[in-house]
Image (cartoon, rainbow, N blue to C red; front, side, top):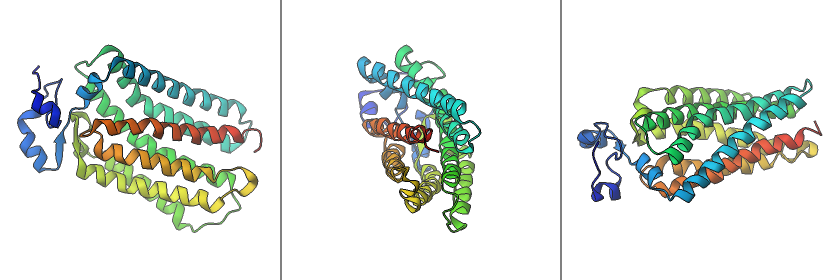
Length: 267
């Protein structure tokens, strides 16, 4: 275990807190587009009040997803759209739990020897489940608006870009467990993801306020979720303050689930 110098902490070029051997390979890693980062140091250095506040928020969010999923299942009564909404909520919360629970553990108990591995694995799993989330959201749109005709190219592109994103997320070049960021691979996996999101936004824009359900608001929620997510993906490990955007991004997901709950009495 080594202590990072003040210089290293300020520049976030070395991986502090846990000595994993990455410091010795900084030059070659940067040359390959990979930057060792100070993820765990930033989380540890947050004021205790902020750590507790974020932990409460994360736990409340995961409980909301779980309860919403159960409500959808219990109230579905044979309506396929609400079984899909249940899957949407449970995939969202279940995937995010792999990332958020290690964060909560670290906020409340401190950094352990396997903290970075847990955070990296959780981020990898969340990257996949977020993609599945938008595919399920497409099927929800199709169930609610079966009469609206769109080019078959749109769902085809949703499936292709989602599958491509998942394959790219599974590639070892992402180095999920290392704690380092690979900007090149972050770009590779997020371009198809952004296309998936844009296509789902387009579908809800096409349906607009059909049926009086107000689901045009999905366009706003999805667009804002991506607007908050993408800066975090590319900047947060070097500029940790940007990570705060994950809170409003999470609220956009809560809003998407809440729109489904509002449909229970009317569909």
